Length: 122
Image (tube, rainbow, N blue to C red; front, top):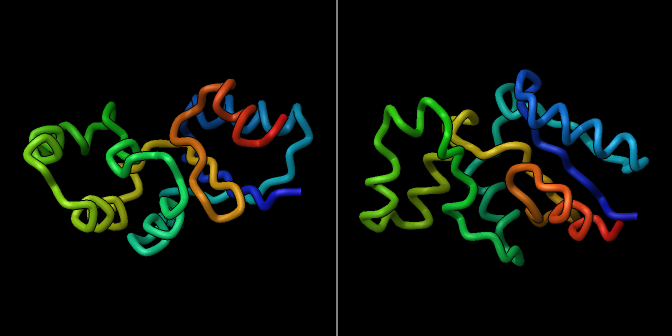
């Protein structure tokens, strides 16, 4: 069985829905609170290695901090991957959630049943 890490924010309704979905399917996972234990830039880089997910997809574009910091304009201007990961690594609320990390590689950012079904081979 795959090693599954579920990175979530406990107060997020989408995260709760995703966790319920995992539980209903009997998927064993490790739960990680994104606020208490935010992924570091190094972890995010390692999780992206081998993933088909673009680093930009890791941003929580609907979040307050994303809007307050004007990150869309910064990303559109061509922010480097290193700068993106450093920013994400310093503030968990900037990271799109939930994150599904399977065998050390991020397979999904946000919750969409078809993508999660495929990522977990269900």
